[in-house]
Each structure stands twice: as structure tokens, then as C-alpha cells.
Image (cartoon, rainbow, N blue to C red; front, side):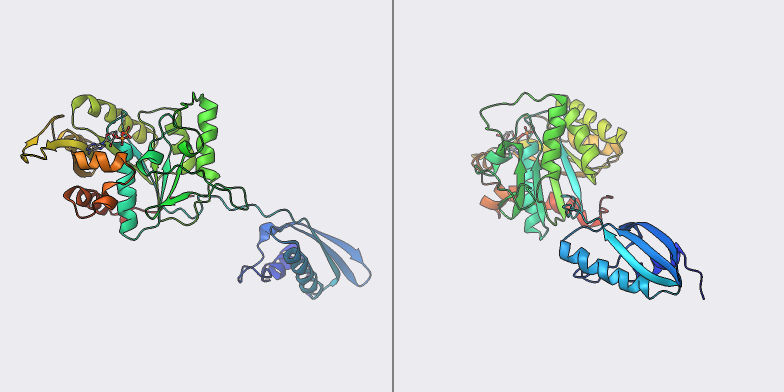
Length: 348
Ligand code: ADP
């Protein structure tokens, strides 16, 4: 007769299927306690079972465990106490496979316009894409995508992202009016960004693109700590002053071990819509040189272009409103060059 031990009991219990859980088996961490009591003819076994989910599931599992344990050698009776608790919703980011931040050293360089067009380009390429506007100081995604409704809540109380042009969108701008700038203090920034990351029903996404506020500050550190970023993409205009700020952003990602996946030069040269002549208003090639210096991929240059500005400011990004234009093709190429399939999924 084998000597009854905790391991023998656990082995018997862990071989059992959880009712209605698609073949998932009981795991050791669901058994929070085992006790034995010597009785006439053998031992009584007492187990406490921690199970999430419906009461009916825990009740049938409780009975199945009692039955299995009673059959063991030396067991006279088995009783299971279920300490069932309310099913905890899965982490909102559990099925988000890659998270990429789009960053810039300073405001107004076209970071949000780039983030929006890239997100849509990736969705056109067949990916499931989410876009989070984390620019709490000046959320512009609602305007760039023409979204003026508020998100609804799901049964777990999570905000349901608004779907536009095939992507799931969430912005602090959905929650605070654009004309009422919010003065955020450190802990409030942290709280607001946490809400946007973790209290949103993101569902399954191949990629979540986060449009960061410009610069380097509290918000960036919160996102880096909370979102387990796959990497960052830096947007800069070509002139020196923008590049100096972009360098600070790159240094921040380096220090926090977030890989810089590439650099994009925006507003790179102006093509005159009348004569077709190119003028390098802010210079050209600065961002490419910078990318080369730090060993990051140069992802491409987007010209300063009236159609990009008009389409983006009217809520119809150019990859949607003029998909066959040369400008839309540039965004599509950049999305392709990022080759997200090759970038490893994030660690949880
Ligand atoms: P940021 O997010 O860096 O503050 P935005 O994306 O909001 O910048 O862009 C600032 C302004 O520049 C917007 O009016 C936008 O339409 C315009 N813009 C962005 N990229 C381009 C471009 N390549 N050509 C013309 N206008 C652009």
C-alpha cells in the first residue's frame, strides 16, 4: 500500500479537467491547502480549492476532486472547501502581442499624423491594430480621426475602444473636452495613463501603437514601466533643433532598455504643388544621419505636403482618403519597412 502524501493527492487532483474550461486541468496553485486526519481504517483528507469563475463550475469541480481523492489508497473520506472568488478579468493587454511607442523630442513635428497613418497602413496590411493617444497634454487623435463620441463600457467596466478605419482607438481626448486643457500632476498622469492602458477592452491585437506626448517626462516613464514596450519609433523634422530634442528621446529609451526600432523624418522637403520643385525648408537628411549615428533603422522621409495636412486635419488620414497617392505609399512603405513580423513579441 503506497503511503498517502500531499504529492499523491496533488497528482490525482491535477489530472482532472476543470468542467467547462476547454480541457484546462486543475493546477497546483488552485489547491491552497491540504490536511490529513487519522480516522478508523485510514485518513480523511481536507482540501481547500481556489477557483475563479462561475459557482456552478466550482461546485462540480469540488465534487470531482472529492471523488478522485476518495479513490486513493488509504483514504476514507475527502472533503473540499471551495474558496471561489469572483472571476478576475484578464489583463487588458494580455492579448496585445506588440506595443510600439511613437515618440518625438518636441511637439508639432507630425508625430500624431505619422502614428495615425502608420496604424492604418498596418491595418490595411492585414494586422489587428490599436492606437492609444497617450498625449495627455494635447490629445490630437480624436481630431485626426474625426472621433467625437465617448467610449461605452463593457460588462467588466472597461472602456470599449472606438473603431475607425479598421483600427481600435482610445484617447484621453475622448474623456476630457479638447477646449479644456487639463493641468496634470505626476500621480494624475500616472493614473490617467494606467486607465488608458489597463481599463480598455483592447482584446486581441497584433500591435498597439502608442502616440506619446512630446519630450521626455513622467508620462513616458509610466508608459515604459506599465506597457512593456516592444520598441519605439522616433519622428523628427530634419532641422538641428528638432534633432537635438529627438536625441534626448533616444537617450531616454536607451536608458530604459526600450529598443529604438527606427527613425522617421517628417516634413522633409516641400514639393511645390504648382511647379513640382522641391525646397528643403527645414533641411533634409538630418534624421537619416542621426539614425545612422545611433545604429537605428532609417524608416523613411515624409515630405511637407498640403494633402497630408488637409487630410489629417479633416479626420481622413491620407492612407484612407488618397490611398493611391505617392504620400500614402510612403506611409505604406514605412509600415512595411518596420517589418513587425520580425520584431519579437513583448514579454509579459
Ligand atoms: P505632433 O503630434 O508632433 O504634435 P501633429 O501630427 O499634430 O504633430 O502635426 C502638427 C501639424 O502638422 C498638423 O496640422 C498636421 O496636419 C501637420 N503635418 C504633420 N505632418 C505633415 C506633413 N508631412 N506635411 C504637412 N503637414 C503635416
